[in-house]
Image (cartoon, rainbow, N blue to C red; front, side, top):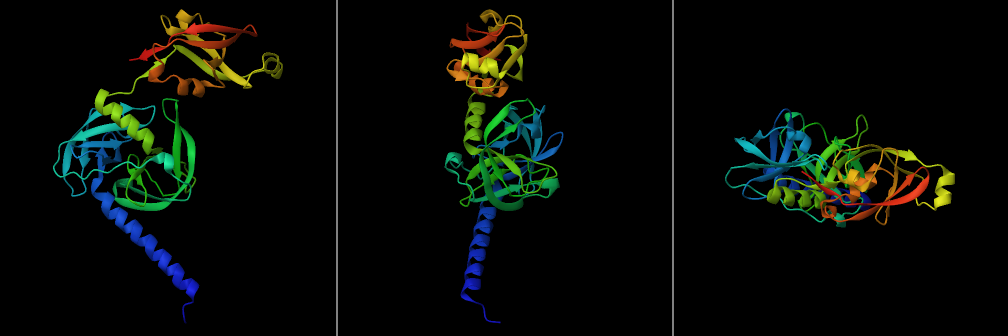
Amino acid sequence: MIATGIERDDHALLDAYSQTVTAVAEQVSPSVVRIEASGSGSGFVMTPDGYLLTNSHVVSGEKYVHVTLQDGQRVPGQVMGDDPHTDIALVRIDAPKLAALIFADSAALRVGQLAIAVGNPYGFDCTVTAGVVSALGRSLRTKTGRLIDDVVQTDAALNPGNSGGPLVDSQGRVIGVNTAMIMPAQGICFAIAANTAGFVMGKLIHEGRIRRSYLGVAGQNVPLHRRVVRFHGLANESGVLVVSVEANSPATRAGLHEGDLIIAYGEHPVAGVDDLHRLLTEEQAGIGATITILRDLKKQMVQVEPTLRE
């Protein structure tokens, strides 16, 4: 049978794809490690002096872990910082000739571009899977209840043990930290975007933690009656019901009470607890802001000064 031009083109494309994945696997695999704590996961080298990135849930509650390099060498690792709110953790090891990866700009990612995952699922070291960036700008909820924004969705197959490994582009640059899959769905996996991971990594290296501001309220999302929304000209049809207020907290000093409905923070409308989480960054600590509430269905404004949660 004589191959047609179309078939020859298909073979050429397939061969180029194979060459790319093979080259990236050879480039990235020496930087990928297996991390053993209470369970087992993956990690990868980000600095030549031994800083590794992984998932917070891989090392959760541990101060020391065991790290196995690609050559089989097993070395001790120390957890230098942990941010459960973004599922990112920093581990340091002492080993020679470490090959460090670099970050890509995840803000420049495009749906459909090649995505390659390297990790250690079920203990099978340096397993490589390939796919594409399926979607951008997803949100993923962590065990702490916070949402991680700007999550990368990929169909590169992930399995237990892949957590903490790198998701890389066709040049071997890290575009995300593999973190989760949806079971029993196939081809729906998620990675913490490189820009988020890079920011957290820098904070953990220099300060050992990520600090965020807080108000001191426990709240829940509640719908607002349409008449109330129309009467006050509100931007959203929901808000945050204050369920409880911590003693000696910024919320207490601001005069917030149980039963208040928070509908805005500063100039930003608040439709739910996730909106407050996004707004209460470290930079907001010590800066006065106006919280708009509904109390007895009347709109009121209170002044609050968030503090850092240590």
